[in-house]
Length: 390
Image 1 (cartoon, rainbow, N blue to C red):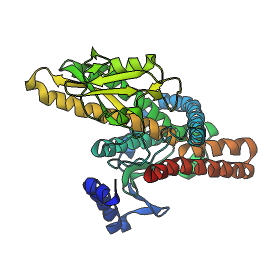
Image 2 (cartoon, rainbow, N blue to C red; image 1 turned 90 degrees about the horizontal axis):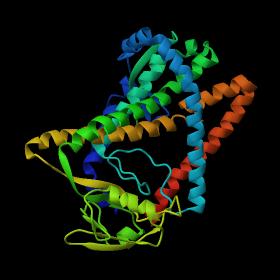
Image 3 (cartoon, helix red, strand yellow; image 1 turned 60 degrees about the vertical axis):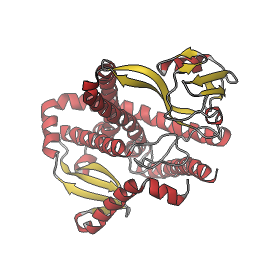
Image 4 (cartoon, rainbow, N blue to C red; image 1 turned 90 degrees about the vertical axis):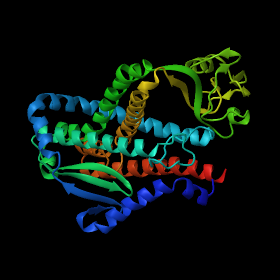
């Protein structure tokens, strides 16, 4: 897609982001700026509620906060493993999907296998960040640390939220208390994602299932350079047959791909189209068959047309919560990266200072930050560059 075509297709999204930046710049006296592109608008919204939660559930919050330290460090190990694995794949498995990609709802990122819809993405992102910051504030309040400010933050055009505990009071607290406060945000994102997926699995999905019947399956998109697109398979097209077997849902093809091997043939068809696809190796699991499809989903039709409004409502809520789930996990893990000012970085720096002293800790932590930041930049930039020049 050329630059002009890109601007035309995503003009409203681009205009929205430009408008956000313009609003911030026109009211810059009301904002505090950090690193030139992070704008903070300080308020007192939600602070009383944080302290009330701390008063009501103080012992429980403190107990879970301490447990959260161990969960936080486990998450830190996990995200570092993903970064290292992603770097390995970038070098030795060039066709593997990008490990990291910028989060910019409504704008497709070249090389990224995930596209975040604009309104679902922007609202889900805000909800996830609010939960993250609110839990930082609640744990701080539970340990009698004053929450000085809350507010809205703009990372360029992206909107988020923040809380500011009293840093002087925080530094006087024990290692356990400080670590639990830092871990509270990322761990709360993990807990929140579990709650969301339970709501989807046991409430919304069953509710939707009572209103519809399955009539076929489709793919959100197909990936360039893989067998599906080369065989003519199209995204958003409804298919009703796999290898001559009538199929009305996505699970049949999903199970088939787990059973067959690379090089096997899969025939996808509907009343008007037939595509013969010879599978290839999965980029991440060479022993598994791969078509090059993204977003395998079941097509449904409503049973009672008079309840279409209810189906639409449940569908909107379900899609929103699915993005809340995805972004909650992503943001929670990203904040556990042991670098710079993010939560994981503050956790690791505090522990290093406790174990080996502030001076040595700063040297080691700085080196870890530089290495990880370099890896992250490479993992983000290289797939974009490859996709642009391909």
